[in-house]
Length: 495
Image 1 (tube, rainbow, N blue to C red):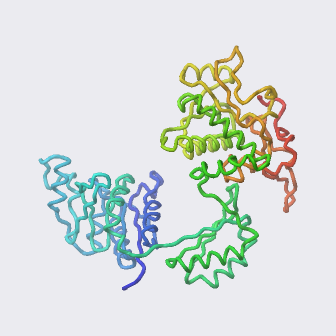
Image 2: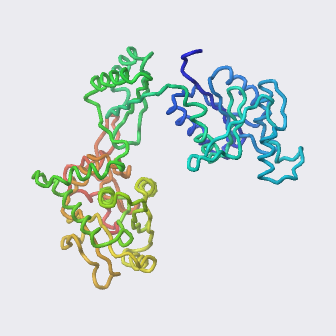
Image 3: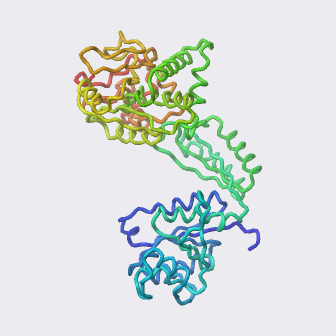
């Protein structure tokens, strides 16, 4: 139909998907890419290696959707049935396509017989059109084509090959849709039941023009509900978005989805106004200055951040990342963090792994008590000279430290750099939450100071009885008296 919005159906083919032997990532990739191209995916189907089922699904999808994408089942073995299924769906015979045959022989050798398994991929439906992608870097045409029959595109199942083929062909296949989906997101501090009447009222007005999606979030530290508005009309969605925000004003969270990408701007916006007279901006500004001085004295290869997943070093890592990006904007390498491995909570391990990806970190892992661990570090990485620490004055054994404190004489020789010495407990949480910095989820469960799992409990100062009469704990940032920070730490907990 002329002017109709293009749609797509995706068929993922393979017993290995249905049996759980392989995780399907192709449909997720395709949905994201097609959405940006203005093509709405209306259905995803996962089918096994059954010729009749594959054929029926392809025929059904082809009649329902503008585009049909299949993934998988085009190799040389007995269970690779996609091309045969496409032929059956359109009542066509298979034949040995000379161009694909030549490509196979170029790769596998010229002495292949027509019945060779290597040529199974060259036997395609009679009405096949071959589509050649272009290497995005070199501009050269790819050697191996994509098979297309009517409105069906037959993609490989291997994710790297599918993604390469899609990127090289997407403009050729889908860019002519002329449609762009405009999206706006709204984040709320309350769950759906609190705002359901408002959402129903909005949806009644806009359901046919600006669809509203509502997605609860149970594990995010900053919001409880994400709303998504979508429309092909940019002016209309802006108007609808403004109206929805006005209706939900008291629940709106101005959430920053990617705080790392804007870290330099946001961190320096706080710490760059030392003359404001505010304690918090002064504390951040002094910390920035200390990190800058350290980077004047040591190269990025000579310095690392002590990082164990706790709140203080999380704030420090975010600051360090911001300063490095401001001071060395073209630097593309890994920032180094020191992790002293010890028995701990699995949530901390998960958070550290996420942080490594989030900040592009190189983890220097050592084991044992701190003195021995630093000795091991000195042997493995003799180039290291300084360690940035999230130590604060109120921490045990920290009263006499300065911003630059060498280790004691009987310890391995390092410069301990302490940018946050004069920060308070509340300064740490103000920094983290004001900039929407991701942090370990244990802090949302009443933990305020993290040690070993066996010697750390939720802080009793945060205990309360919830609306269901159950004992619960407020998040760490709600602790009123910062001096109670370590109240959840068992006296036997390691320092």
